[in-house]
Each structure stands twice: as structure tokens, then as C-alpha cells.
Length: 265
Image (cartoon, rainbow, N blue to C red):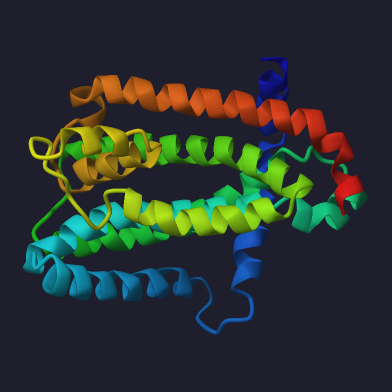
């Protein structure tokens, strides 16, 4: 618990630095491109078009109605996937910088996630506009969207503390995480739907994945379906229990090993 409090205090006390570093991270990542940060919108839109064609017409044959459903769910994946893969290598790839600057290492996963958050918010704005053209105008349910964005950030930070620590100690962990994310994409309800009556056991197993909660929450918000966090309050409690447990584990690992991170250069 003391480790968790230490990490929390470091995030609060260094929030201004996290903001500055995250903006620099976002700009530097696209500094060599003529279109700059626009690529953070162009690339996801190209992938959405491919998934819509392949899964909407060829494999699942769900037609045009598949597009808004797909966009509302996959938008958060374009935030989650790069955040998890890049936070896992965020510490060991910046050890030279850390040794020259005086700030807590726990802010490194934070500003990497925030850099991706800015890009996510831009893409989210585009998706909301496109959903309007497909007939899904914003409803009162969209006010729960900031909750799911915040929930995603906290989940990613908790995972990032664990993955960045383990990847610094054992570099192979990063490669394992990259591979697991490819599998996780298909274990999350982004491209498929399971009937609860036909596959209740499989569905319950899939719901152990906290990203299931996030994706369905985004859909409920963007498509105006329901107050998902209230309608599925038991699942909400499960999600936050997972986040808290991951954060406690991550902060404990991080505080325990960070004084020796430089030894793993």
C-alpha cells in the first residue's frame, strides 16, 4: 500500500511535467512526417475501412450496419494497443535520459500514455462526426464517455507499471507483450458478437478481459445504447477491482526495482 501511495503522490506532484513531456512525445513522434499528427487519424481510418470490408461483407456479411458498430468499438483499441506496447519499453528505452534528469521514473509510463491520449481524443472526435453521418447522433448517453476514457487511462497506467518494470529487467517481456496484443485484439469484442444465450460460458470467460468492459462502454456511449456502468454494475465492480489489484502489483514492483533500473542498461 505504501508503494501505491508513493506512486500516486509522484503523479500528482509531477503532473505538469507529465503534460509537458507528453506533448513533446506526441510532436517528436511525427516530426519527420509532412502530415504530422494527421497520420494518427489516417492510419486508423484505413484499418477501419479494411476491417469493414473484410468482416462486414466477406466473413460476417453484416453489411453497412457493421460500420458504426465497428467504429464505436475499435476507436479505443487504437489507444490501448500502442499505449500498452510502448509503455512496456518506455523505461528501458529512456534510461540514458533518466540518469541525466531528476524526476521519478513512475512518470515515464504516464506521459507516454498521455501522448497517446491526445491522439485518441482527436480520433474520437472524428469518429463521433462520422457516426453522425451514419445516423448515430450524440445522445444523453455520451456524457458517460469521459468516465470510460478515464477508466482506460487508469487501466493502462496500472498495466504500464507492471510491463515497464518487467521489460526493463527482462527485455523479452516486451516482445511477449507485443505478441499477446495481437491475440488480445481477437479476444476483445471489436470484430465479433457472442450471443449470451447460445454461448454463456464462453462469454463469461471473455468478460474476464477488462478491455471487454471498456469496449462495450464506448459502444454504449457513442451509439446511445444504455448507461452501461449502471446496467452492468457487477461488471463495473469487477473492472475496478482488477484495476486496483493491477495498480497495487505494478506500484509494488516499480518501487522495489526502480533504484536498480540503471543496472539493466
